[in-house]
Image 1: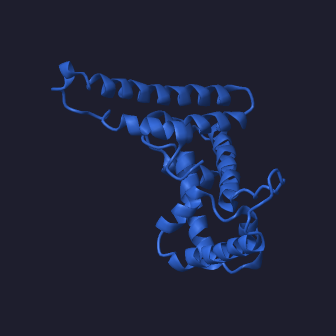
Image 2: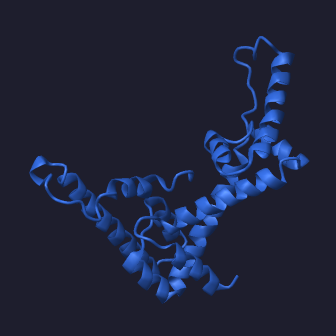
Image 3: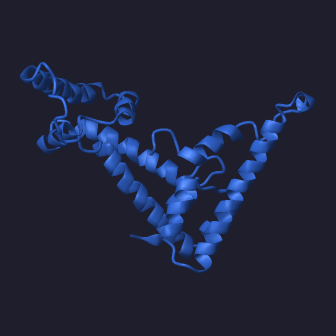
Amino acid sequence: MNPDLSTDRYLEALGKDRCPLCFLTASSSIERLKSFLSEYVNDPKVRKTLSASNGFCRRHAWQAVSSGNNAVGVGLVHHALLTEGLEKIGKNPSGFPLFKKTKAPEECPLCSWESHVDDNFSRQFAACWADSPKLREEFDKNGILCLHHLETALRWIPKGAAKDSLAAEGRKALERLLVELKDFLDKQDYRRSHEKDGGEWDSWIRAVRMMVGEKGVF
């Protein structure tokens, strides 16, 4: 892996309104889902995996619906799942006997893949942070990490100057957001209602993003 190319990826994803790791994970997840629905829905191994997990989780199932022209792929997947579900009910219409232990379904395959990709992005970002003065400089000017990714990236950096600088810069970026959020909240007071909104107007949305990540992630 070319470290310069990895650093460029994170530099391009920086922005005061988004965590670059959340953004990259979400983008990769959507591409993975589109690829799956257009190319792999008839793959026997994929069908077996989906059967074991009872399909996608609720989040990824609805993401599949809204991710583009994937009606056929979504339809094929859920035709198979509904057919299988009805067959199970047909074999035991009264339901499972009381207290019978049943095997829990496997994790949603996209959740599993997303977790793996998310971890990789955190590890790569940590390595780039330690090696790239440019990334540290640009992050100071126009970067922020959500709490989740600040914590996970810090885990990948050994104790030392790089770890200390990421902790300091990550904290500073979140504290800037807190200042904007407080300004937004203060302006809800009638005594300040005449003041025009500034850059803080969407701070409440960005605060949610810094706590739970981008829509569709985690």
